[in-house]
Length: 215
Ligand SMILES: C[S@@+](CC[C@H](N)C(=O)[O-])C[C@H]1O[C@@H](n2cnc3c(N)ncnc32)[C@H](O)[C@@H]1O
Image (cartoon, rainbow, N blue to C red; front, side):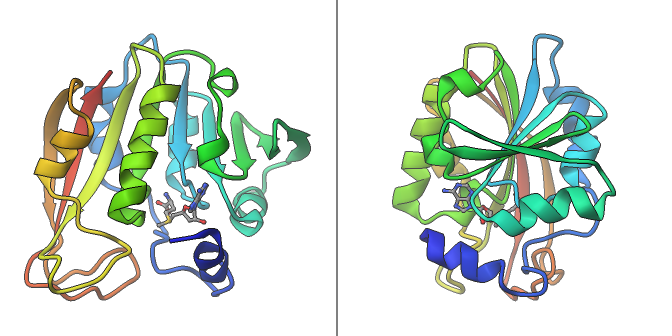
């Protein structure tokens, strides 16, 4: 999935992955992932997710998104004042405790983080094909200080039945990608027959899993 693919997605009226409510696993898992040493929530590949409004009530939010449209619309749709400036190869949209960096997540550097983070990954890892998933996790692990925690929402379905995105990322791959971290499965949602976000996504089984990953 290259930049052109995602920019094309954002040409549609509303991309199929966007949810019009807070993801139910976020409030459900929050008390199990938040720790007092977390300075901010990092939301890689954030789109214009409503989850960032929920997160902002708890911690400052740093989202990273390639496309200009969701960064701009996030603030206008919530009626928030926003200021924009260029910084370290990104455009920063900032207002009300939320900073969205428009640019390539793979260019984000350690000095743009404020210490141990809570990372919220909904539809970021599973948006990427296998080779990019390794690169993504490698970059994330390089960025994050010790004391950081990741809340990862993964998706499992028989990968012979559909092509991603969203990609199936089985438990074995989560364990392998985050080898050396403390990993715990927090919750499972059975989405079989319900589709994925706005998409029908018909498969014989469809499970969403919430993982706590501690660095
Ligand atoms: C499947 S969507 C998920 C969006 C969001 N996490 C949500 O839950 O609605 C993936 C998003 O990642 C963005 N994206 C893809 N590659 C990126 C990259 N290299 N850097 C930053 N954002 C990227 C896309 O534009 C898209 O908005």
